Length: 409
Image 1 (cartoon, rainbow, N blue to C red):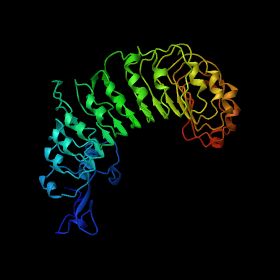
Image 2: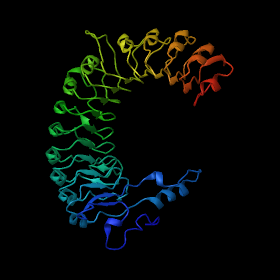
Image 3: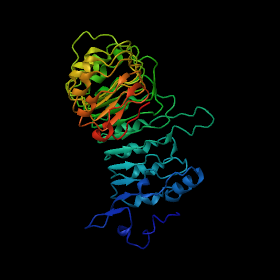
Image 4: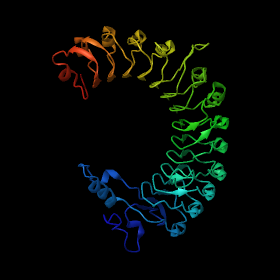
């Protein structure tokens, strides 16, 4: 390749090659690290697309995967992420490297079907196939699609599975994923899945991170289709953004039963809120993003009972003044309520939220003078009050708060 990243790959002692890790005693090759690390490239966009693309091409590895990898009987770690393989199929012989614990082939330009032989990697703990084009190369919306081989359900030791940003057009999330009982991390965002979410995902009782955002699930996912979520007692991060929950009137009751949930993202879910029949108590929740849903003239009251929240985003959710309930959320470090047509002045109680680091109230209709009370918010670093109708800015505000990003219009 042009940049000579593999210039050290010469001679018989491969243990001296860059990116190769060997056992100090046996000399067996254990790990191969060859990701395209873009931080090593000094490419800066100067308005000339061709020069910019040429720069990245200079640093990017490419080619084919050689079957000689099978000679490395003790290989347990293989990272070829961000290498461009030009749309070739993922070689089936990868499934014969039986000692692999870690396999990262993300954003590597593979297409076609995922080979079922990957189901032979029974020792694998980490598998990242995100950012490829599995299921076929899309040509003029010809509708190519494919399936995830059921043999992946044999990977009972797997803890990390990332199939995000693929093109599994026209298929459902396979139910056998629910049989990979050791999964801690499952990322299926923007993978082109459709249909219903299989209730078998409720068997993943050890999963801590689940991202189902950006797929084309059935148009209206009712609350009774979400009860499998309540079984995920270890879940800490849940992202179902861009999943239509317009019919799931009891979604908040179902999700609030998760005892370990720390982060919940439900942006653009077409939520139609109705008051829950039971008390809502997200006991561990620290981050809540409900942006780009429209609740009506006001936000649901249960949100303001979450006094332990650290980050709250209710941008594009309601019309009216800043909800008074926010003043009780004294643990907030980030609060965003932009694009809500807020049409009052800034309430004085807002300045009692002394731990706020980021405050976003842009694209509203806030009026009057920006109060001097902002000077008392000593933790504030990121302030956005852009596109409002304020009449003046207190002297010394920006320098006193050391604000990193503040816009006024």
